[in-house]
Image (cartoon, rainbow, N blue to C red):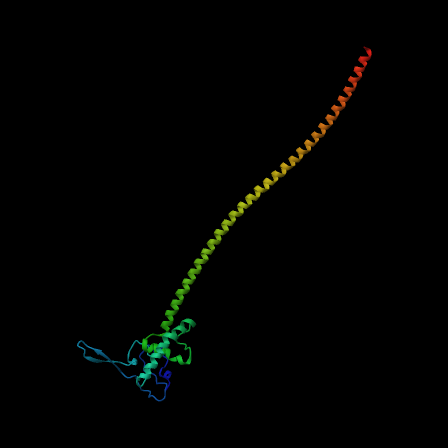
Length: 237
């Protein structure tokens, strides 16, 4: 009989209900076979050992009754069962968290004993583990969303500040451009005035030259007349 045939998957209807056990999947065990009552040795004060009878899993109430159909808990079975629990902690949880699957969905055919092992030994329901993991994932998602909202708010604030600074700079640039245009217009007016003054200076120079020419001509005429007058005076003496 294969080790995985010792386990039968539990359902939501029989969790904690105390219903009678289902017949085992293996045909070589009688349907009425129940897990035997186990004994647990305790030591009283004085070192005297006593036996405490522990009822089988089906007799307990309030626990998840994943049905173990075991005739005798031999050492080989216990070793295999311990290996199965190690597989739950080392492989089952890791793949559950990485692949975001559920413990109710078996990863491989050999892992069918994992939910039953969890229910029977630890008294932990897969849906409770799943709810806890989902709650953790939701917390992380909320933190990510809050962080993203904070980043978005900061980005918007930074963008608004940058836009305000750009608008102020744009206004300053516009004012400077207006001042530059006014200065350029003033420079053009000064250049026009300078050209007019240069034209006026040229006209004055021309007039000055003409006046000089006229003065020289008049001086020549006066000199000639004075010479003639001197000659006439000399002739009469």
